Image 1 (cartoon, helix red, strand yellow):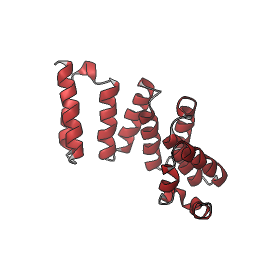
Image 2: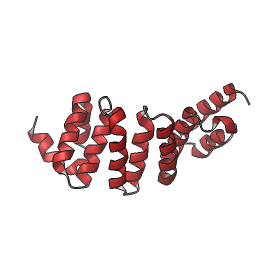
Image 3: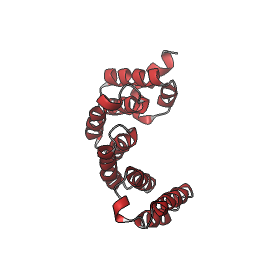
Image 4: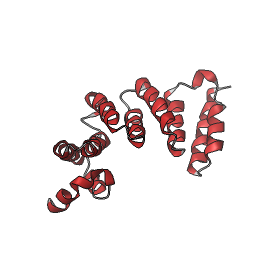
Length: 163
């Protein structure tokens, strides 16, 4: 198969996911030639597929590989930690993002936002507030998102009193 075939399969897979057709998306990805299966584009599509299917163990595996392939891209790290959180492995999720912080911390608001969530869930409100402030400094959207995020319930009163 040609690289064009891989690109076509990736487009089709994304289209199927957009329509909620997970089995069809998986078939498209399964049809990609072996030499292309471990490229960042295909691994990213695998992460998307497993996220849509809520296959958290598979998200962990695919995201870990993606983070190793392209450590400067936040998708692998964020997805990896998110899946661990969904598996109630919050301490591990925190550790993953702390590992990504040296590469991504200055520009990645979602990294700090998710760390705020994980610290909050682990009972460290002070660090959760600090992380939320870092995320909000990168983009104000994170403070608004925090007002409805159940992972940050312990901070909700602080968010409404610090307007």
